[in-house]
Image 1 (cartoon, rainbow, N blue to C red):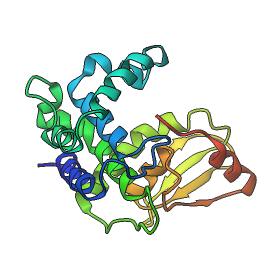
Image 2 (cartoon, helix red, strand yellow; image 1 turned 180 degrees about the vertical axis):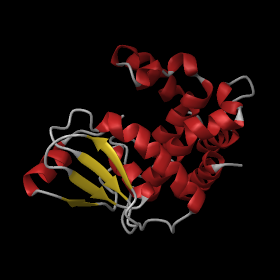
Image 3 (cartoon, helix red, strand yellow; image 1 turned 180 degrees about the horizontal axis):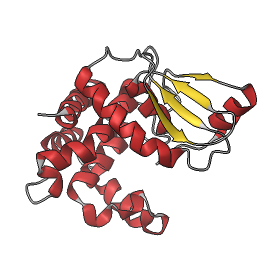
Image 4 (cartoon, rainbow, N blue to C red; image 1 turned 90 degrees about the horizontal axis):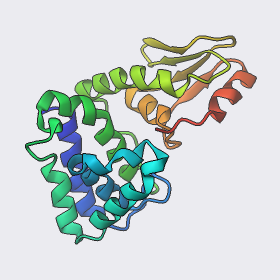
Length: 208
C-alpha cells in the first residue's frame, strides 16, 4: 500500500461522511462531481481526453455526468474499488506515480472545501511524494513567469522552478506547496522576495 491507496481510502471515508453535495476546492464541483471525475479517470480512459484537451471536453463531461447520476453509495464504491485489473493504473508502481498526488490533492479539495480546516500533521512518506511531485509539476506551472521562482521547505531545502530576475521563494510544507502549485488558494504558504515580484507570482494561473 502506498500514498495513492492511503489517500484514496481516506477520501472515500470522507465522501461517506460529508455526502454528495458538500463543497470542494474544485470550482463548480460538489463532492458528487469530484467522485464522478475520479471514476471516469480510473475506468474510462477512452473518455478522459477532455480533462486536458478542450475539443474533447463535451464527451468527457457527458460520461462524467452519467457517473454523477449514480446513487451516491454506488459512486463512492466505484472510487474506493479503484482501476479495473486491465488498467495500467492497477499496477502498484504506476498507481503510485499517477495517483499519489492526484488523490492527495482531491482529498484536500474536500477537507478544505468548507470552514475550519487545518493541515494534517506531517507524514514522511506523504511529504516525500509531495516534494517529488511538486518539483516536476511546478516547473510547468511557472514556465511563463517573468521572475525567478524557488520552492522552499521550512528546513531550508529548495527546488528551483524557474530562472529569472527578482527570485521569489514560496515557503511551506511539501503538501502545501503541491496544493499551491496546482492552483489551490487554500494552501498555507508564504512568499519571500521583492513585493512587485511576489505580485507577479501570485497573479499567475496555476491550474492543470
